[in-house]
Length: 174
Image (cartoon, rainbow, N blue to C red; front, side):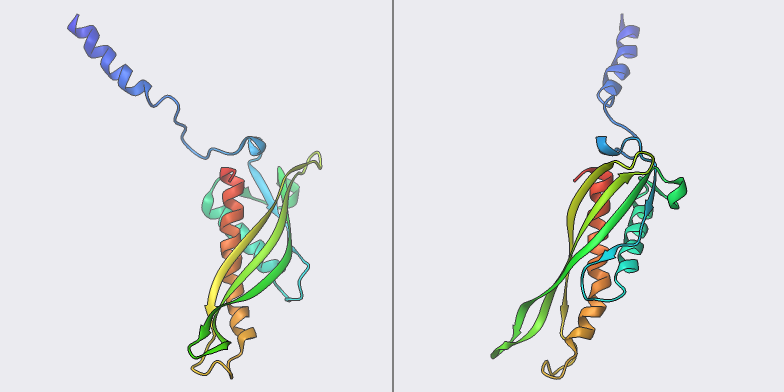
């Protein structure tokens, strides 16, 4: 009798792990997708050369996540298409003693993306996503600082944040 108890005890302990799954757990919509192609974003803003930056950030994040393999369009199961809708810069912190001058800004990129089944052309999913960062006005004198240059340097950081959020939605569903 003691032998059967010793044999059953490990089985009972290990049966609690029966629901776990090794490897990526994709959302139901993306279960058939293993390879994805990321196309260059469309740019509906006035900021030049952001399209490739966003696509590269998405590719880099998909590769780091490891759920999908990034391939060219001919080999892909799905296509990732995106459009940059807006870039918004808002004042976050004013200069002490002068509320009209800003020392820190918040930068938000908003994009819309679609995931399309390459074989059928059907849209699998579409969402709107944002990426944010904050940046300070460079230099000791805010009146002579080049805020546009500071914003251009902050855009890649906001693009990376947008990519993290988009790939999280692709790989985890939220």
